[in-house]
Length: 455
Image 1 (tube, rainbow, N blue to C red):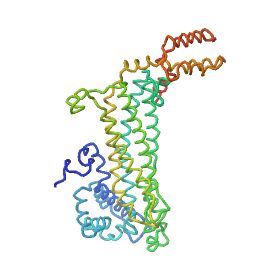
Image 2 (cartoon, rainbow, N blue to C red):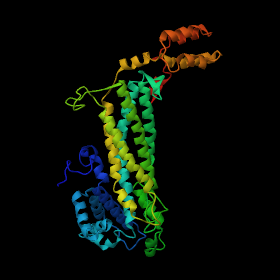
Image 3 (spheres, helix red, strand yellow):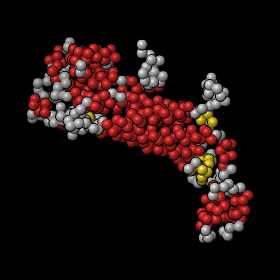
Image 4 (cartoon, helix red, strand yellow):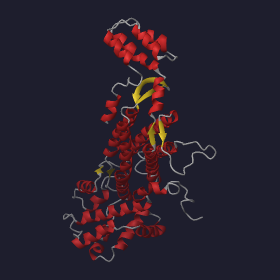
C-alpha cells in the first residue's frame, strides 16, 4: 500500500498533515540529519579557526563559504544520500560523517584535514546538540507563534466582553457574578505566565566526548583547554553548555521544556472544557460555516467540535510530553539507548500540541456572546446577592447576618421583591440601604471589568 494522507499511520501525517507541516523542517528525520550536518561542519570550522591547533590548517574564505552553503542548502536529496550510506553502516551518525567526507572530497583544504571531521566526538556529542537545536527552532518558530495567536485571541475576547455580566458557577451552582471578559482574561493571564516559562528554558548541550571527560581530546592535545574551547563552540550555536554529563546530555532542560509545554496544554484543556460548558449554557453562540453539518441525523446541531478536537489533541500531546520528561532524564550508568527511540518522537508531542492550538484558535474565532441569555440567567439568580447583603450587615454589626441570609436563600431561589423587602428591614444607614436596593445580579461584578481590560 502506497503512503498517502489516506494511508498514513499517524493522523499527523495523514488527516492533519497541512496543519502541522511547519514542524517537519525541524522534527523530521531530515531535520535531524540537517542539524547533525550543521554541528559537524561548525565543529570542523571551529577547529580550523583555532591557531593553537597547528596541525589543522585554517580554511580560506572560499572554503568557509562552501561549508556555510552546505549547511544552508542541505536538501532532502542530501538526506537520502546519507540514508543510503546508513543502509551499509547501520549507524546514522557514522553515515553522515562518511557522506560529509565524500561530499567535500573535491576541496583540497578539507581533504587535507578530513580526519578532523567528527574529531574526538562521540555520536551523542553530535546528537544531543542537534536535538537541542531542533527543539530551539521548533519552539521559537512554530510552537510559540501558535501559542501567541491563541493568547491574543483570549486577550481580545477579554477586552471585548469586559463589561458583559455573567453568572458564575462554583461547584456548578449559582455564585457571585463575574463578566464573560474577566473569565477570558483569567485564561490569558495563565497562558502568558506559562508562555514565559516555555520561552525561558535554556536548552543545554554537551560536547565532551565518550563519557564526558574529554578523554580523546586530551590524548591528542593534552595541554589544550578543551573545556573552554568546547563551551565557546556550544554557545556559538545559541545553546547553553553543560559541563557535567555522562556519555549523553542528561536531558534535564528538555524535561523542563516538555513539562512547561504540557502545563500550557493543561491550562488550555481547562479552557476548552469551560468554553464547551458556556456554549452548552448558551452564553456563547457559534458562527455558522456554510455547508458544515453538525449531525448526520439532527439538522439543527452546531457542535463545539473545535474545542473537543483541541481537548483531545492536548491530551494526546501531554501523554507523550510527560513520558518524555519522566523518561529522558533516566539513563543506566553512563549510557543506554532508550532515549534514542524516544527522542525521535519529539515531533509527535509538538505536533499534537500545534494541532490542538490550531483547533482552539478556530473555535475561539467562531464565538459570539449572547447577552440576552446571560442576562436571563442573572435575572433568575437573585439569591447571589445574599453575599453583599450579609457583608454589609457585618459592617454595621447586625447580629447573625450570615445565618439570617442562609435561612432565607440556601438551596432555594429568592425573588427580587423578597430580597428587597428584607433589605428595607435592616437597621443600617439609609444610604447603604439605597445602595443595596439598587444592586442587581448584573451589577454585582466587583472589579471584573477593570481586571479584564487590564490583561
